[in-house]
Length: 281
Ligand code: C2E
Ligand code: MG
Ligand code: MG
Ligand code: MG
Image (cartoon, rainbow, N blue to C red):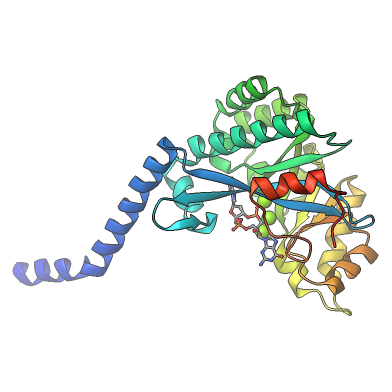
């Protein structure tokens, strides 16, 4: 009987599970090494004014430049980085890279009023009381002004109601860094927290933009109206067609990003865009 149970147990922890655990450990080790060796690059996706079709700024998106596998997308490593705490050093490297680029851009071009780069900040980073010190050190080292940056966070962070999150929010605000709620509408969307903190922008999740029909725009309309009632602006994510663009424009949405305008670009291509007339299709 005992022998049988032993064998069952052995079977439950199957070879497949073992292999999955090993694969995860390998990925974690590789990720750790990649952070040590700074194998990450930032790609920049244009954020466009719907009225003027001009460039308002970029969203910074992390890519892992793997020595043998090529460019690895965030979907394959951000979750693991969050689970292991590695998102803290990784997020710091991304922010530093963005600020170094911003510093070069501002030395070479007139960036214009309101130009901003949005950086995704995960809950793990935001909860860390040392996060604001990391931010300050990077701003000082690169000479970047807080108002050139925007942090994209998720609704969940605002719901946590912890001391350290409240003080991080206040500190960010006092540096002049703005806040966006990313993927708005896919989480808990508590309206109370939205009005309690100073948030400048709601980003309408791609899934809502995709679902828009000429006669069915209710959710997107509701988010745009909510943003405006709370004196926030709206950015639509994942705009892929001119029809979507025109619908968003007629709903009063201010800005958008998506493959219709441009994919996330390597830093050289983003820089070229700054050199040009900064108009998008
Ligand atoms: P997100 O912040 O919602 O970023 C938007 C994602 O949508 C990006 O995917 C972008 O490439 C993609 N996208 C933009 N326009 C279109 C479109 O028209 N069609 C479609 N199908 N997709 C579009 P990406 O770069 O793979 O990033 C995925 C997610 O990974 C991001 O979602 C963000 O949550 C996370 N992420 C990326 N970089 C960072 C980072 O530096 N730190 C943290 N914490 N998270 C990051
Ligand atoms: Mg984002
Ligand atoms: Mg998003
Ligand atoms: Mg999204």
